[in-house]
Image (cartoon, rainbow, N blue to C red; front, side, top):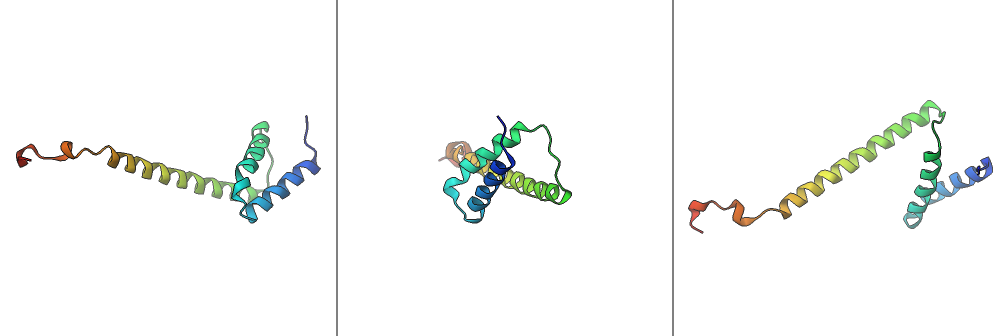
Length: 93
């Protein structure tokens, strides 16, 4: 099955409405549709300006995910903290 240019343009339109309208409740579905399309492509020809924008957004996503992962690891390390393990046996407590 192939999507026509009209169907793709409509999906782009809907994606822009979701994004600019901040319709977070529809973000998962929008991303899923776009993900299906991207996964079906082996390569795509894009203008340099679009490639630079994608690279910039990709870097932002990666940075945010890394920061979130580091924060989660930090929280987990604090949750795993045991007061008994941190006490000095010579304290006599």
